[in-house]
Image 1: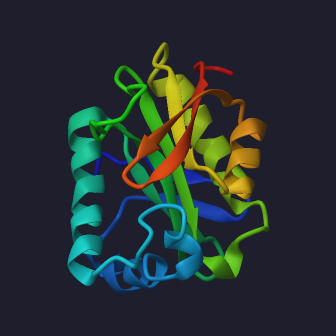
Image 2 (image 1 turned 180 degrees about the vertical axis):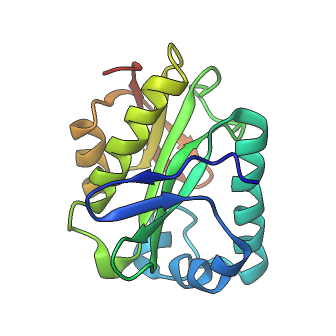
Image 3 (image 1 turned 180 degrees about the horizontal axis):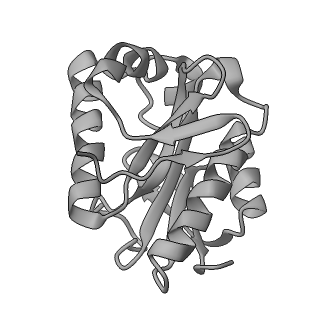
Length: 176
C-alpha cells in the first residue's frame, strides 16, 4: 500500500510514480526543453527507472517526495513535481530544507500547470512539514522557472555553481 498522498487540482491528479509510468517518464526526460536546464542531456531508460525508484524511496524515508502529474481528463503523465532532500554537494548548502522541483512535458508548458501543481504541493508541505524551510535551485537562464519561483513565494538568496553551470538559490518559509 502506498504512503504517497494523492492530490487533486483543477486539471491534474498528483500521484505516486508507478512502474508502468516508465515509457511516459522516459519520453518526458528525453525532451530537449525538459533537460536543457536540468541534466543538460536526455536521460537513459535506466536513469529514468532509477529516478522512479528514488522518488519512491524519498517517500519512504522523508515522508515527502515527488508526484507524477497526470492530466485529469486523459490520465496522461505530463510531468512531475515535489520535494526532496538528495544531499547535494552544493554551496550554499540546502541542508535543513526540502528542495522543491518541477518539470513539465513541452506539450503542456506555458499553461499554468506547474504553478497549479506546486501550489497544491506547497499547501501540502505547509500542513505536513511545518517549520521546515523550502528551497529550490534554478539554472541561470531558466526565466519561466525563476518567475514561477517568485510567484510561489520563493526569494532569491544566493548564486552558486552546480556541475558546469550557475544556479540561483531560492528559499521560502513554510506557510509563505
